[in-house]
Length: 416
Ligand code: SF4
Ligand code: SF4
Ligand code: SF4
Image: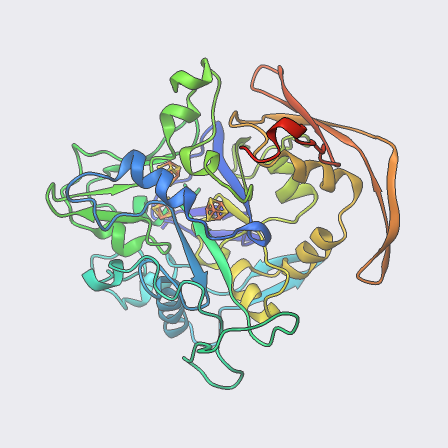
């Protein structure tokens, strides 16, 4: 098998194809701390792309309540279990010279153990029909009492004391750098676009073998029974290309991003190096959040697909659960998120101020507006400005750390 470099693992890994990378890569950051599970993203995708006959069970965008929720049910627990069975006790990270390296096996490396049929190039499993049937299963069910496995909390919790926890995990296809779905397809019907790294299924080449569904560890390819071919999130590529009539030719964020009520989502296109790492682009907000501030982490990097979805981890969840889900950078990411410097606080204001893709930003210092303590630590807040620029360097908008206050005029006091 060819060797490719996976920067999320800090090492080379085996992958069934030679490495090939796009010029730019579709990527996104979701701030879990702000998601309210309103499901507006879910419905925006559903009403745009999967409302037809044969697509009833398809939710390309979904939001599940962790730890118990999952669409399809238990997808992550099942793949983690398969990896553990293939490499018992070996799925660990090491730290050398300050950098982390994954010492375990990815879904491509573990497939050699032949846990799956001979023809499989990737370790995976095919969910059964009933596992796709309840996308909202266990919604808002908190983790059960300590020491009682497989129990959810039947009474719920009350403020101010939280003895139990849950959080919302919003998911779409990660348009992976090394997609499991693409690696497994015997007809090479799945491809990654050279211009933006979006992963698509060629509907005319697919014969519905469902190898991609078995191989995608995130279970983001779905089978359509009435056409007998597979379908998946297309990253709303007409919008990303700038072909949405609303965008006047400018690259625009996807439907699920634009619909986000909680303002947790920021999507962009990052520049790639010839070796698959991200080219330095200091003032691209996605690059900044992932590689400079390091507050956003990939979802299950140990699977090995180099997913391009990044998450600011939830600060209230037990750390071992988060280490398993986001890898070893969790403590530092949460620390920085809870005590942001001036630039990070300003960049966090870029989320959902516009539906156009931000290619770079500029930070401008403003006056001091608050001095006090927060969680026992001294804190000073400045009303800094962040300016967002588009593909051609044109200004898209500017916004400040302090949100403006609007007072409703007296004649509209009781109207909307
Ligand atoms: S998340 Fe799954 S479907 Fe999407 S690119 Fe990665 S492996 Fe393929
Ligand atoms: S990017 Fe577009 S196609 Fe993909 S989940 Fe979001 S709305 Fe659906
Ligand atoms: S629209 Fe945003 S806040 Fe609402 S569920 Fe989706 S990701 Fe969460």
